[in-house]
Length: 383
Ligand SMILES: *Cc1c(COP(=O)(O)O)cnc(C)c1O
Image 1 (tube, helix red, strand yellow):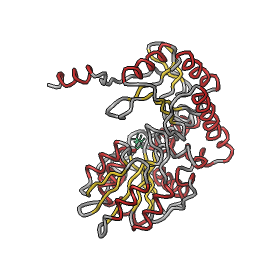
Image 2 (cartoon, rainbow, N blue to C red):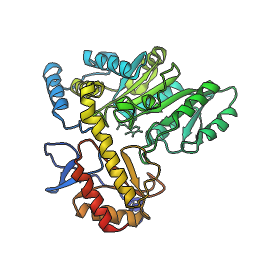
Image 3 (tube, rainbow, N blue to C red):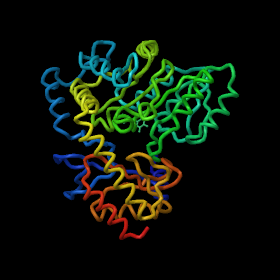
Image 4 (cartoon, rainbow, N blue to C red):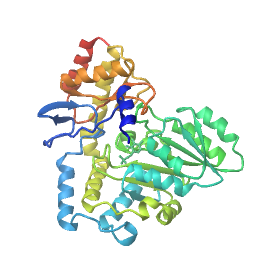
């Protein structure tokens, strides 16, 4: 029934497939497929925590203490004291009154936006927002207005014309395919002026920007009751799950209305224990040098090297670095050539992005020699 449609994907070079790595110990900066070892520039494990003993030990201890499955949703006592401890830790980490856990970043966005907006409201959304935010906007009954990517002036114009309605501005902090950062200072000022709620998705900012504290800390923006910060444990924090940090009133509203919280089983306690451990690491001064500072040193080394080769990295300001080097076929060809050299660096194609690109993510777990290997191979290719 779908085979004709799939054939059409294949013809355009747009067929996707799942690639499973083999179990090996060690950081995700190196992965194994078909018995071969590759340097991995495709993971969001920015701090190299995902496979670390810090997290596996914390999870193993909690597994013994609490068992595996949660058994029910949080509202039906599926959660444990660890869930509550993690929420308290997140609120203190983000400087908000309260926080609430969700089972994934996707679930958080899909649950929270429809819960805080509805008929008669208007959502203003950056044109390059993550797919989960786009889906969440579709699920909300609010009217949607798209503003040009990272263009606060455009947002300002559009929002002024929305007199009388309840307004919600929605943006990624770090854009996952571009690696640039939203102009949050300007966006916050516009929200304040126009009495709008702000919902930020800090999936790629948490653990990375603002000395690990996220995009709001990066810009020195103080939390406000009308700012809702979503973040994930699944990227820099190396675990799984997500959180929303906001004023106590909003969190209580979400507990009562967010369907992904109410109608879904809580995350296992061992996952929560790993998230808690990762958060403690990012908060601790001693570990910051080892993880956050190393991430940024690696990012600068790769970024400077790519620029020395004259490559186009769009507006990247973060460890997400796109490399634009031609059309879909050319980009696929480069990605395959890198794979032959044991470097995993996937091509990102339409419809995920309009402009095909290699998407490189560099992490604290890469060595200088990993980075130099990538730069050396790209140099040989004379792109
Ligand atoms: C990855 C990502 C999500 C989804 O988070 P998961 O925990 O993987 O479901 C949401 N928003 C952004 C911007 C992301 O990059």
